[in-house]
Amino acid sequence: MALNSAGAGRRVGERRLLGPGDIDPDTQEDAKAYARLKHRLLVLDMCLGGVFGVVLLVSGMSVRLKGVVTAHTAQPVLVVGGYFVLLALAYGVLVQPMEYYGGFVLPHRYGLSTQTVRGWLVDQVKGGLLGLGLGLIVIEVMYYLLRLMPSMWWLVTALFMLLFTVVLANLAPVLIVPLFYKLTPLGDEELVERLVKLAERANTSVKGVFSINLSSKTKAANAMVMGLGNTRRIVLGDTLHGEYSADEIETILAHELGHQVQHDMWWGLLLQSALTLIGLYLAHVVLRWGVRVMGFSGVDDIAALPLLALVLGGFMVVTGPLGNAFSRWREGMADDYALRITDKPEAFVSVMVKLANQNLADVDPEPWVELILYSHPAINRRIQRGESYQRQGRGGCGAEA
Image 1 (cartoon, rainbow, N blue to C red):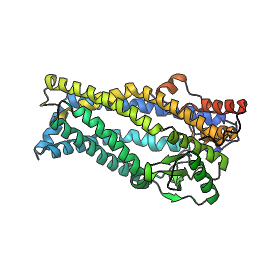
Image 2 (cartoon, one colour; image 1 turned 120 degrees about the horizontal axis):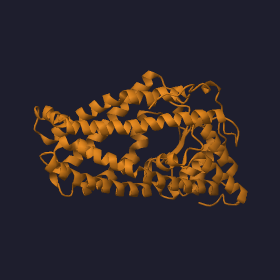
Image 3 (tube, one colour; image 1 turned 60 degrees about the vertical axis):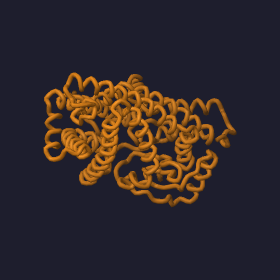
Image 4 (cartoon, rainbow, N blue to C red; image 1 turned 30 degrees about the vertical axis):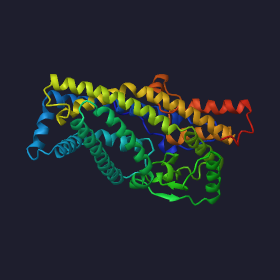
């Protein structure tokens, strides 16, 4: 499975944003090549993770790794933490070449990244430490519950994961995002007023409008409504400025507000929690089998962590298309909301075209690729949605919320 493409990136220096309706065919050629490579990397990553877990179990390396930790301490919390840290570091070293290729080499080859090697490495270290810390919290809580209630740990763990996700969503704008990006109040007062009024029409309270320095890492454009409750804020990538009109930025934000109005985060959490509950119960069943067949000391034996990870990882792969289908449905509803509340289909279509060209998005992927991997409708479908709205001549909907 080749991870390169002949002639890739040959038009990077020539790529430019075009006008409404002008999908750059040269850019699309690069977009499809880039997407193919990213998909292959995804498959390779999943296979590598699966093989890593199987080798740990079959070779006895997992038991030996536990022995390395227990040789220094018998305290359950320290044993779990020590094993997890050593395992995470070993896997991180294993996948680092692939991370570098997919996260640094490819984005630079296709003209998407603005990061230096040093900046990328710093982000890798920060992201790795953050992931290690958050993962350690989850693992320690889960194994505490495995020791405390071996028959019902899966149910309580699912509830904990739900609460943990909500807390992280609330803290992300003030604690997590600033580790990687700089958030500053948007200086365009006229645009700020316009976006705040749009949020008010959508009955969504926000704590200001901010610019995020995406240009320090990428040429891609993005915008979002970030946070929950008292941390919710409008965030615009600085890569939007200068290339997008006020109407276009308003349309982008209207889509994000559609998620807020339709409570998509909570519906997504509900689906995620249900899938997590099922996955954890399957892991519970398999762990009990592992105790009988593979000789683990109990369901709380940390040496069985690779088995638990294989079950949960396999379950996520199988149910991924379901989650993506749900997401595409809600994204389509958010697009409809954006069209209704702004009543600017020309701006909506223009935004989709510009984002496709700027973000190197495959406008018309293979149907099976969209079905399995896409969390958003393909760009061509979104453009068609805007054009259909425009043909219907639905005016006077700007006040709808």
